[in-house]
Image 1 (cartoon, rainbow, N blue to C red):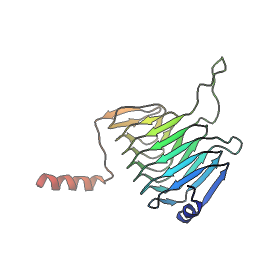
Image 2: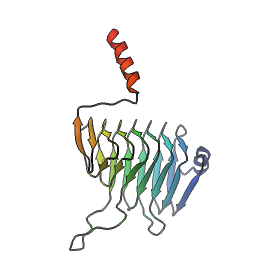
Image 3: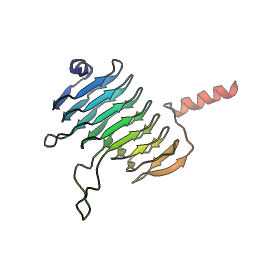
Image 4: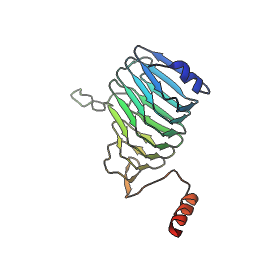
Length: 207
């Protein structure tokens, strides 16, 4: 289902462009998009935004005007929010999946392509972009970059200005640095101000 009219009604400054065929944009009725731009160049690509997702000042791009791509997929699961960011898929058959209850700060870049080719001396492409997987309950801090073929497990935090370039498998960790590495383990986070968290814990202790 491609329901462009309903999407435009959700956008403060609508900008939706698609050039190709059989592309699908599915937005839940409970999702809210504000200042979102969507551009699709190619065919058989899908964008799915599920219940209670909040997207603010987000630019979603699949393909390029001079290089249309096909069979790509973006899925953003329930209760996830973006304050601002740039999402880009630039190679056919690539994908981005974002889990439930994720929180993305400002200036986030998620790009499943290097946009240009790197190859070995035998002429083999060595930097193909295939997928980015972001688990559930992931907090991505300001100006973080998530590159092609990366994986971030559930309950992790991606630190400010961090660049994620590989796959991580251990949950409940803090990733930081350029390139990212695990700097702290056995953590959990909540979308709750520290003062409110301390008050909540104090009330539980009193009980």
